[in-house]
Length: 128
Image (cartoon, rainbow, N blue to C red; front, side, top):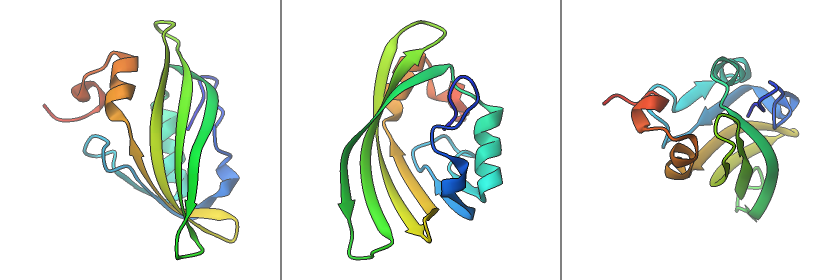
């Protein structure tokens, strides 16, 4: 969520104070965060060497629940340590109430992210 310069890609004010963020395909210990500050602190403490350059919405689907949206999107940018341009797709299931995201469950293309950053799963914090 943070750019190389430390700014957030998604304005923090869109996140509810008590947001729950889940990323089931992330390494253990990085799969669930409770509260906006916990989520933002996590990202501030481990900035990625990526200069994000484009956000592209691929599709958005409403559900039977008016508070729930399913969004498929692509983030593109440049890995600042290598100069390699890369992109990855994501699917997020969002619960929005009163204009704020209360629950965010995101499925990431971990392989594309790892390849772009030239990382192994262990480098992201997964146990060997």
